[in-house]
Amino acid sequence: MSAVVACCQLAPQFGDPAANRDLVAAAVADAAGHGAAVIVLPELMSSGYVFESQDEALALAESPDGPTVTAWARLAAEHDVVIVGGFCEAATARPFNSAAVVDASGLRCVYRKAHLWDAEPKWFEAGAAPPPVVTTRHGKIAVMVCYDLEFPEWVRLAALDGAQLLCAPVNWPVYPRPDGERPSEVVRIQAGAAVNRMFIAACDRVGTERGVPWVGGSVIVDADGWPLAGGSASVGSQMLLAECDLDAALSKSVSPNNDVLGDRRPELYERVART
Amino acid sequence: MSAVVACCQLAPQFGDPAANRDLVAAAVADAAGHGAAVIVLPELMSSGYVFESQDEALALAESPDGPTVTAWARLAAEHDVVIVGGFCEAATARPFNSAAVVDASGLRCVYRKAHLWDAEPKWFEAGAAPPPVVTTRHGKIAVMVCYDLEFPEWVRLAALDGAQLLCAPVNWPVYPRPDGERPSEVVRIQAGAAVNRMFIAACDRVGTERGVPWVGGSVIVDADGWPLAGGSASVGSQMLLAECDLDAALSKSVSPNNDVLGDRRPELYERVART
Image (cartoon, rainbow over all chains, first blue to last red; front, side):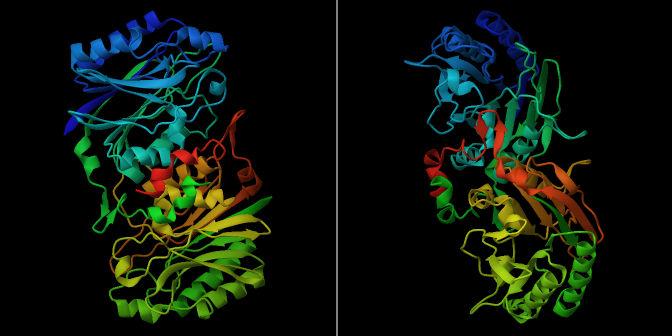
C-alpha cells in the first residue's frame, strides 16, 4: 500500500509548549492538505532541546495525556493521519525523551529514547523498551529517537518486528563534513534502510536555540536506501513529502537467492548482545 | 599510527590462478612502491567468480599452503607489507569463499565468508567463524568478504574485537542507482565505518566475466565514514591509496559524553542474536 509520508521540519520555541502546539497544528494541516497520511515531527517538539537544568526539564515535561499529545491526537483525528512526534515526557521521577504515535483512534504508543546524547543524561532517564511497531492502516510503523538510529542493532529490532516504515523524530547537531557530502546522519539512515529493506523518515528541527544550531537534514528514504525527499542540510522550516510504496518493504529480497533478513545468522551474532 | 592503505582493483582471469598471481605480483609491487603498508585485493582473486559448476570450483580451490597464498606471503615478505586477498579455499568437502591475511612473517589467518551471495551456496560452504582481527605493526586489522559487510552485526563484531581497519575483498554486482549516487555498497560501508569509528577498505574487481559486469567501486573510508579514496563506479583496473591515521579508530568518542561502543546497550539487543 502506498502512503504519502511527510516530515514537518520546524523550529520549536524553547519553553513554550503552547506556541509549539500552534506550530504543529499549522504544519499538520498543511501536510494533510498535501495528502500526507503519516506525519513526522522533530524530537522534543513540545519543549525545545537545550535544557540548562533539571528543573527546566521537569517543568516542561508532560504526560501522554497532557496538552501536547492530546492536541496531536485531536489533529490526527481531525485530519485522519498518523502523527509521530517527540515530546518531553513526565514520569514519576525524571522525564524521558519520548516520542508519541497518535492516529484517528487516539494515542497508539509512547517510545522512550534508549540511547541518550551528550548532556541528555543530566535531564532524562533512558528508556529500556525496544522500538515499538504499530500496525496502522498504511502498514507497520516503528518509532525511535535520534541517537537511537546510530545503533544498527536498534534499527534491526524494528525490522525484525516487521516495520515497513521507521519514523524518527531527531535533533541533529551540526558536525563538519566534506564539501558536497550529505550530513553523515543521512548516510547512516540510507544504510539502515537498505540493510533492512525498510523505509525511514527522520524529521530534524531548525532554529538556533540558546546558541545551538541544527542540521535541518530531514530525510525520507526508500527500502533501497535512496532519498525520496530531503537529505541536505537546510536552515529553514520545510515540509518534505514523499509517496512511499510501503509494500516494497514487505519483500526483503535483494537477489534471486538473497533476503536481507533471511540471510542473517543470528546464532553467530551472540556476542553483539553480550559485549 | 599512520599507514598507507591500498586497494588494488584488478580484473582476475577466470580459471587462471597463475595469471592472477602475476597480476597481483605487479599490483603489489606498484602499491608498495607508492608506500602502501596494507594492500587489499578483490574477492576470489585466485580463481575468478562466475562458476558454472561445483567441479569448476573444486578444480580451482587451493589450500592456504597452495601456490596463490604462498605467493602472496612471499610478496608480503619481499615488500614488507600486509596483504588481504580473496581466494577459493580447498577444504575436505566443498570449498570456501575465503580471504587470507599475510604479512612478512607469513600466513596470519584465513577467514571464510559467512554470508553467501546468490549462487554461491551451490559452490561454497559458508564459514561459521567471526571476522578475525589480526594485530599487525600498523594496528589491528579485521577481514570479511563482500556480502558479509551487509550485516551490521558482523561489522560490529570486528569493531568489538578492536579492529582499527576492516579490510574486505569484494566482488560487487552492478545494481541500478539514481544518477549522481555512489554505489549503495559504498554508502553502507560509510555507515559501518562511522557507527563503529573504524576505517574500512573494500577492494572490488573489474572485468566482465562470463557476461557479468562489476561495479568497480573500491573505496577506503575513514573512521567518520568519509571516503578518502574511491567510492565511485569505474570500469578499469585502478589502485587506490589513502594515508590512514589508524589511531583515530582507537577513540570511539563522538561528543564530550558519547562513545559509539560505550553507549551500546547490549542487554537490550538480545533478540538480534535470537531472531
